[in-house]
Structures are given as structure tokens and as C-alpha cells.
Length: 135
Image (cartoon, rainbow, N blue to C red; front, side, top):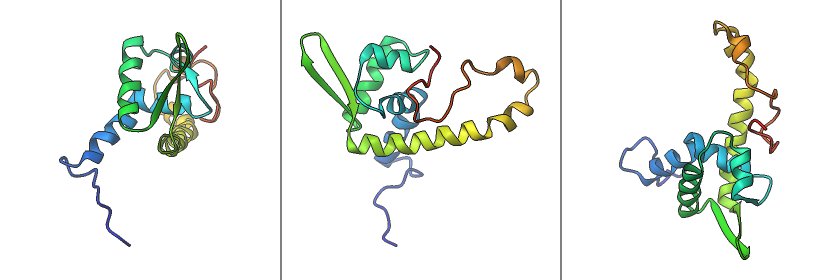
């Protein structure tokens, strides 16, 4: 097997910074929210519950600079964001991770005192669904 030119375990490697961007709470949720198709800023904000406009703007700029998100302005005061081919690849992997977390949540909740009262709203399904956050 050919050695990879990148190593996220090396603190000096640029891939570590990119991993930080996509694995951050807001980076990961934003990429997965954009997975089904292009969205406007407010639609992303609704999909990613709890993110401030400032943080969403910053996250989109970082993901765009990394080549994972596109920003298009098809009309006056109308901007849409989507994922690039590389962004879709990363978003698919993140959606798989989210599905894995959903799969283990019953066991996680069993081990937490008072867990029944802390279950999130909506009983979210698989990560393919756009309804990732509370409505």
C-alpha cells in the first residue's frame, strides 16, 4: 500500500487543520445539512439548530476556503450554498458517523442518570434526513 502524503497525527500536517474544520460541531453539522442539496443561509441556520448567524457565516467561509462548500448568487439578495464533490465525500462519511452515534444512543442513555428526561426532541432518524435539528 502506498504511503499517504498526509498524516493527521502529525501536529504540523495541514490535514489536521482540515480535519478540525470538518469535525468541529458546526462544520460537521453544516456539511451534513447541505448534503441533500443547495440551501440558502436561513435554511442552513434552521437545519443546524443552535448555531448563531455569525458562527454559521464563519463556518461556511472556512468550508468554502477548504473546497468543501460552494457559494453561488443566482439573483439579487439570493445566495445558495452547496457541497462540492469533495464536500459530498466528507459529508457522506460524517453522516455515517452520525448514524453510528444514533445506533449506540440507547446504550449511552442507559448509562446516564436521568437520561429519559434529556432525550432530544423529535426522535431523529438517519442522517440522510434534512431534519437534523429541532424544528
